[in-house]
Image 1 (cartoon, one colour):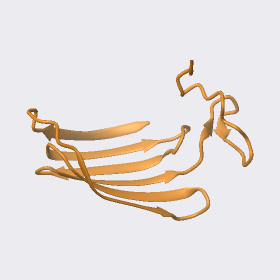
Image 2 (tube, rainbow, N blue to C red):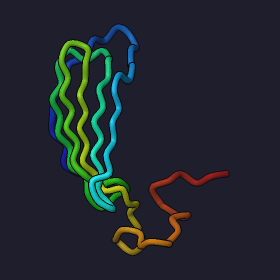
Image 3 (spheres, helix red, strand yellow):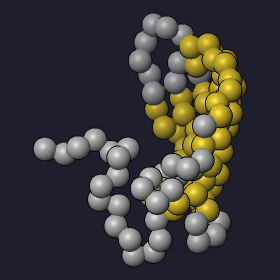
Image 4 (tube, helix red, strand yellow):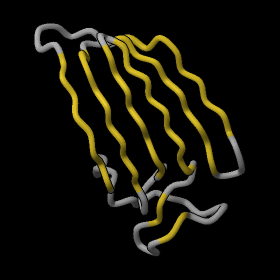
Amino acid sequence: MFDIGFGIEWPWGHRWDVLVTKSWSLTTNKALDINVYRNLVLLEARFEVCHAQDHAGATVWLGLLGFNLEIKFYDKRHWNYDADRWYLPGEEFLDDPAEPDSL
């Protein structure tokens, strides 16, 4: 994973509201999400790229004076950690090591 950015938040409070959430399926395996939040951010800019994991892709966060914009372009598939590849259609992902063991 590659993650770079900075942020300044108002430390007194706990506001987090989702104002807009939109999602588009671009191809069989790729999707685009755009979200707008109202929160305590004063200033934020962040960029992240993930690979070899569930829903890998790129995400950009931009925030200013209590509002955040999140844009995410990602793969809809889940990662098979044992085979080091995406799960193939019809395969199960029951024993995913990234998930905590259930009781």
